[in-house]
Image 1 (cartoon, rainbow, N blue to C red):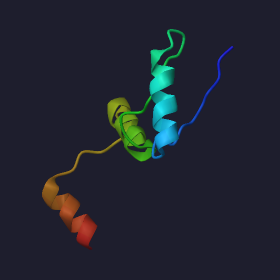
Image 2 (image 1 turned 180 degrees about the vertical axis):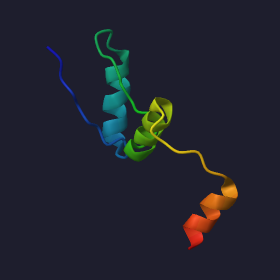
Image 3 (image 1 turned 60 degrees about the horizontal axis):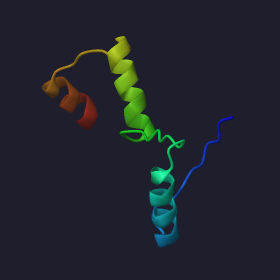
Image 4 (image 1 turned 90 degrees about the vertical axis):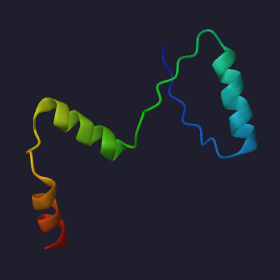
Length: 64
């Protein structure tokens, strides 16, 4: 059986609980490296769903 737990590590109690969980041999952590939007952009870039552009063209599009 697998359980997913989300812990907001901003509180002192949550930090202590998180550190305790890390000591258990049967607990695995899957933490994303980046936020969801960045992860999605990385996947799109790896799969070739993006288009190449120059910095100049990007700036023109951004500021127009």
